[in-house]
Each structure stands twice: as structure tokens, then as C-alpha cells.
Length: 329
Image 1 (cartoon, rainbow, N blue to C red):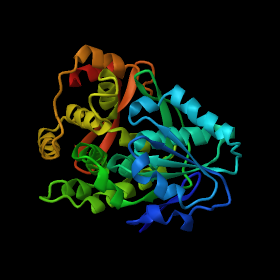
Image 2: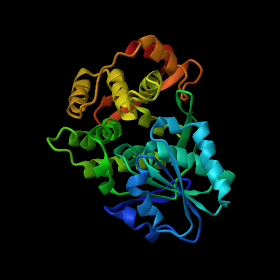
Image 3: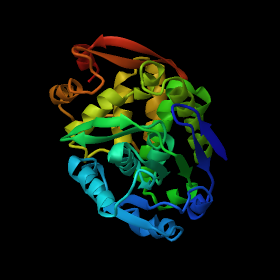
């Protein structure tokens, strides 16, 4: 299955089981290739990718948000310099959202930009971060405050790699798909209310949502802001817990519950999250979380855009005072 994304740089998203073993059909072996992966994914899939190419190198970073740092970014850039990568060579991101964000930012800034391919290995990166061109690193505990818009050359999604995910990480990623259903696709949301989750259909429909939104607003000047539903509060929770105790999707889930006013919509949302064993409440300090909200990169002085779901599959962007968000906590 193939989805074509048309924006400043057109690229395909290819969904095929086993595609991770057939990358030579899509990626030329004429150039040097640097695979950036983490210490969890490395022993599982790195050799499968490396064995398909001739001049291939590997940089392994630590698993988790700790690697979205200047220190790790510099390590990756130095590895490219060490092996004399040119502007015609390639970076492959092999891992979850952290690896994808980091690798994309490395590729975007190395010699003013080289091609990179994204091979997401988690539900979170498959449904969300691997497409759309947002690449970034964190500064201290502030999420994604240094980054760029830089589109991949292609995205390869192999559902087979999800077999090695823990249950927690599996559901963590599906929160972003649930978000897409709430703001844009009622049918997608309803898939989560079925007795058995059709994950392939969920991922496919999530990709269609993000493709449509990104094509209409690549640089997030308008419509694309709706993809931030739950994220302003969610990122603040991530920072409060030092990007450690709660995973990204889990924090976004908390943010979606907090920002949803409609009682019936919130009830349906909470029921789905509980089915996926995701917390809908936490013990975070309201005042401290609010301090992180004020540092959100989307804030404009004392104002910020928030996303409100008016009915399942529909939402609106509301400009408000940052102070108004305190009541939602």
C-alpha cells in the first residue's frame, strides 16, 4: 500500500509487511548511508538494514527522550564528518519518534541538508512523527524547542516490527491515532470503540488524516495547529515528569482529557483510554505544570491557540490567554 504526500518535497509512505527486508528496491546503494538507531532497536533490526547496503555505517544512541539533546545531536553530526559524508549521502532513521526527530534534525542541518529516510518502529512514530516533516531536539526539559521543518525522502512502515513492542508502548502510540479521530475522522475514532482494535486500519486512516492536514498547511500557520490537540498540556506534563515517568502519548492523553469540555465526548474518550490501560488523571502540581505551559514554543507572549473538539471528527482553533489554561488543570 502506498500513500503519496505532496508538499514542499513530495514523498511516498509505503506500508508493506516485510518491507524492512526489501529496502534496496527503494534506496540506492550508490551513496554512503548512516543508520541512526537506539540501543533497543539496534539488536533487533539494524543488521537487517545494514546487510542490504555496501557503504553503510551506524550510530547508536540511548533509548528515550534523553537522546533528543544537543550532546547526542553533536555526536551524530561528528559521525557523519568522521566518515566524510557528502551532501549526496543518506541518513536512515531506524527507531521510534525520538530517533526520527533526532535523525531528521541531523539530516536537515548537516551541510545544510542531506536526504533522510524514516523507518518507524513504534506505533507512535508510524501514526504521527514519521511524517509531516517536524524534526527537533529538546533543551533541558522543554520539548522540541530547537528544530526545523524537513521532509523525509520516503517513509517505510512495516507492521511486523510492532511484534517486539511492549503493550505499554503499543498503546502509547495509538493515542495519537485516537487524537486524529477526535479532531478529523469520526470513523477512525469509532474504530477504537470496537471490541477488537483493527490496528492496520487505524494506522492507515491516521496517516490519511495527517497527510491531508500537512498538505494543506505544511508549516503550521493554520489548519495544522489542530494536530496539537492535547499537546500543549501534554507537553507540559512531559516536562513536569522530566520526560521520563510518562510517555508522550500518555501525556497527550492526559492533555486531551483536560481540555475536553463536552461531558459526553470526554466520557467516550476516557472509556477508550481506560481500555488501553492509559491513565486519565495524575498527581502533578497544577502550578508547576502551568509554568511549563507558559514556556510552550507555540505561545505568543501571553496568548496561545488551543484546540477544542466540538463533536467527534470536528474541532476548532481558539485563541486564548495562557492564564485561561490554568483552569483546565
